[in-house]
Image 1 (tube, protein in one colour):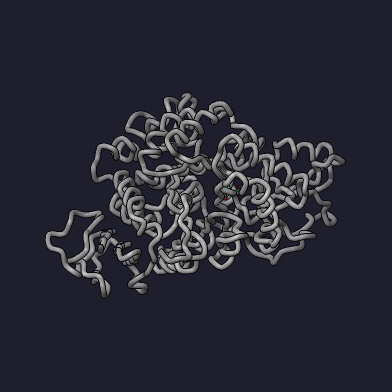
Image 2 (cartoon, protein in one colour):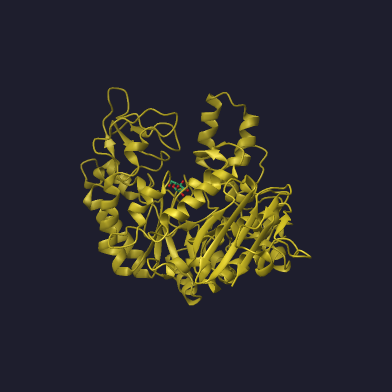
Length: 558
Ligand code: GLC
């Protein structure tokens, strides 16, 4: 291992993300909950992961499914209660699984007590917990646009003031410049850490400081004001304060979510050393290989764009900081439907798993990804549930897009594709619930489900387990150097890892069509051990071969 890479548990771990509403319904009301999580802890452990990240479990009116928090120190009655959460925490720890909570502090819900007081008692200290401003004549205080819902300001007739919401109207932005608010945040962090929680995923953490004076932004079709509400220097001051006063003394792990992040800027947050502000950072660049800036502006998939991003992050962070690796979460359509192929679901799912799990970094796996769940198709927009889908419907209508076309787009590109209930078995409602689930189950569940995958030795599920086991058993995968080959290929992604005399060659085809592969110089496949392959082993090993659809082979050289 290069001298500068320091081993750490959080570099070696793998994390499973639970989006609780759709994971498992234990109490039979159609909504996933912590009773369901308890039932499935052994399953999660069996994957070979080391930690669970829970998307928000707090009380919430669900304008953004939990990312609008009404009480930061309680558990939603949809999911259980604090006592039940403590039990989940104990049971997880008993299985050597760490637990990370989702910390959403850029905004609260408008139903949080702080916001209610800020509005009803404008003379109270709570007024300054948010951004309340007078308008400019009949216009809002500035031209910022919300990521989720039109303008970023909402007018309150009683107060005759506007409040800022960079996301939905029901998600008023918190004014982190206020020290009393920061004290509240530190109390919240302490509350969960004292209970035994091991760390946090920090929602849109680079948004938590706004430019002083809230100046107008450069006008854009979407996201006007971004340059003033993301990545402000103050973000680091706040993170430093949270780290020094609370997180570091508890040894808590942190991963920050950071849209529009580049490796250069990321390093300002995650470079190791005295002033490391976060352990890891989720960036979005590799999620843009089939779209422009947002999932909703699709383009054909371009492998070269994907490889460039992966390799840049591998190279730039090497020896300086650590990568967070993911292909799915609750904010994006399913990866097989995007970068793989539903026709070759298992083959391409296996290839995609190898592509990212064998890179250098800490991998995150999103519920359902491990059984190859794919996008859903709904027959009307009314069946969707998400504020983003409805907001975009208005935007696209203005652009003259017909409702039929919009439905096709939403089915392909909405993040709701990742939010259908987890498919546990071929039983009614996919074994997710005894009752009618809160959101449509994907009709493919009789074929794609955990029980079927358990029973099939060649399933994607077993493949995930095997890859995670291999990673655990081979420091090469965690700490090895990374080198890319065949950079110009539009169909093949080939990279090698090297560590203490061992080498790994990862060969992945992103094409249905046969592609000729020749081993790069120095890799004699005849002398390598084929440790993974998503097709039957070749009858005769050769240094060159024609790939099968979405073929993936991994060779170990010792
Ligand atoms: C993050 C969350 C997303 C949420 C948004 C606003 O991007 O992952 O689900 O809608 O922040 O909180």
